[in-house]
Image (cartoon, rainbow, N blue to C red; front, side):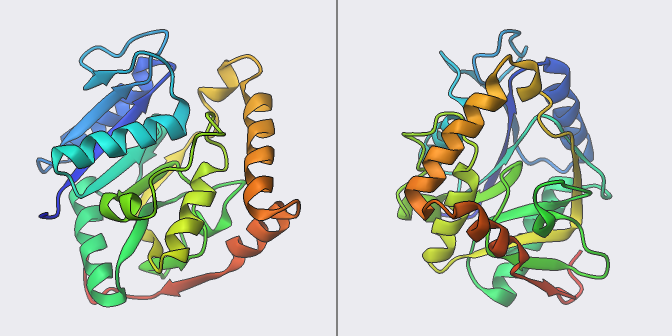
Amino acid sequence: MSRSLVTVILHYGSPALAGRLADQLVASGPDLPVRVLDNAAPVPFAGAWRRLPHNLYWAGALAWAAETLRAEGFSHLLFLNNDLRFTSPPPHLSRLWQRLARVERLRGAVGLYAPAVEQSPYHPQMVAAPGSACREVEIMDGVALLVALEALERIGGVDVADNPYGYGVDLWLSLRMRAAGLLLCVDQEVRVRHRHHTTARAQDGFLARAAAAEESYMTARLGPDWRARVDALKQARTDIPSLGGAR
């Protein structure tokens, strides 16, 4: 299968959020496909690629999109939260895509790739580091994941059956990719700003339910000390100063 990238923005909440991000990506060019997936939102997204029959939450929607787009013939999926804004110079998608190819030529197969975030209260390993081109990490946050779909299929897909809300699923997915010998990389020259929990905070009781599901999910997989293990993994990172002139 030839390499091909599709970007999916997950819509739930205000259509203006997904619309603003889609417009930014389309305007930045060149012509790489950008689709909005309507996750059965109370306010539908006009012109959505698909509207799901019921809310699959983040992880369920990722699993659905990955399977659907793999069947369409795409090799990679960039799955974006709607509350993002790219802050580095355009073109955003082609630049990220080209730099991923360069990283793989220099460093090896990448399972998950992501733009760096300007700031994060939860994931220091995902924050942009001045003077670095790329960062190899041991665990990844899922707000803007570029997923190698063949690799995802090889490790058994998104492990989501017992955690519909998705918190912790991104962490476990990245650990499974690393266990399969694949790299996890954060691009330091393509950056986004993320407004944490924009939609989740608007849903009464959602954050509490999601936190309880995460606790059960991660304890079952990593043990009762999973938070300490995850925190240690966030500190394990290798900054790569140059990609040999790739921009």
